[in-house]
Image (cartoon, rainbow, N blue to C red; front, side, top):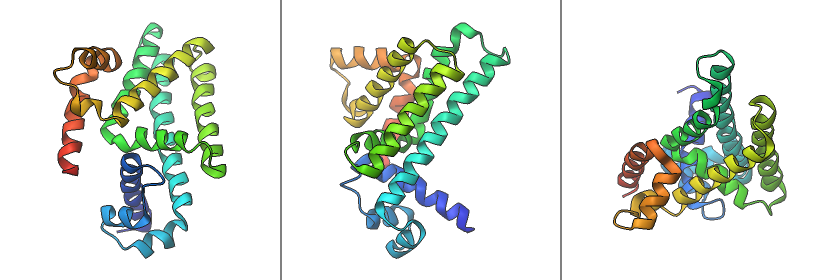
Length: 199
């Protein structure tokens, strides 16, 4: 396997492990096991756990920005009505749940805001998303704030395992429907697949 593919493979597994266990609770050994490679190879490729985590955050941020820019491009080309921009951006965000590590590793980065290196990158990434939505998408600042707040709610619901454990609770069902809308069935399917992989 070429080195670039192996690097992406490791980043994908690292994203999932960091997303599930958090930065402090993850070791390079756990990432190596998930990727099916040796721990020294992970260290040789990335240097430190911190550098690996920052690269995982960069990868996640990059995927999110690409998804949002594609929606903006569709709006600008007239392929979607301008009035649907917010809803389509929200759908693009929820679609990223298929790779749960993307959203969860970003959230883990935000949680590590106290760390000099990780916190600096997390803040810069969050502001990059804010500016993209405000400046490139042309969304009013207060609406961007609401959009980001909804995204953090979605991340929180994923982090606490709500998609795996909400059935039978009226309030949880209502909150899940409000948060995920028409994508709820897809979110539940992905959550079920991920739970069975972890079992």
